[in-house]
Amino acid sequence: RVREQLGEAGASATLRAHRETFITEDDFRRIRDAGFNAVRIPFGYWVVMGPADGEAYSGPCLEYVDRAVAWCKAYGLQAMLDLHGAPGGESGDRPCGRERRDWNWSEWRMEDSLEALKVLAKRYSGHPSVTGISVCNEPSDRLPIDVLCEFYNRACNVIREAGMPPDEVAIVLPVRSEERRVGK
Image 1 (cartoon, rainbow, N blue to C red):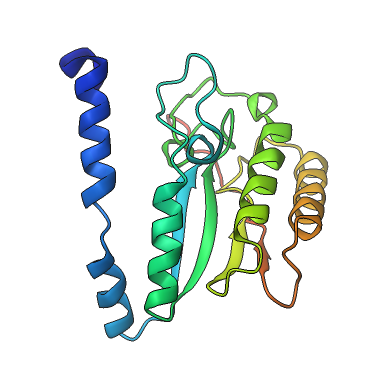
Image 2 (cartoon, rainbow, N blue to C red):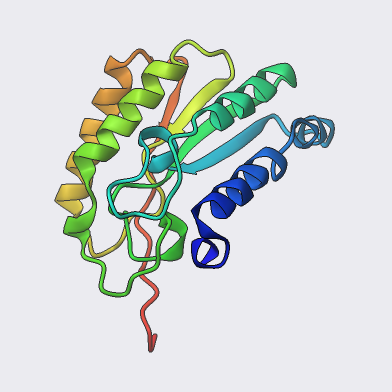
């Protein structure tokens, strides 16, 4: 809708302004001053890999994650990186970057998710503030449990092989969410 109203250049400028101002260094200082010791940094796969053809997302833009992780370090906070929107979606619900009632679990591009996790793990391996990585967000209950477990196993291997050892980085494997269906 923003692209329809502002055109491509206007939408890009608006998104860039949002990314530059929505979260600031002062937020990290305030988090520390409030007595917290960690920050969850959610982002969609397009931040890491760029959007797939035909998707309306904008990226890659890992410089914003770099900045957040640097602010964590500056303020003594731990960072938990959260792949919050998987390629193709890990559900049909809004938190994964889209809302589609007709979504099917086979649309989740797990190989692309693994590649995004590999890029992240290599990029932040050894960073003193990165102490956790979540491999997805609220996977659908429509996904067969054996498929989800296989993805989790492969995701753990990718992250560890990319240089994030278990004594430095926790891997978060989210529980499945119950789809919000119309009429429930």
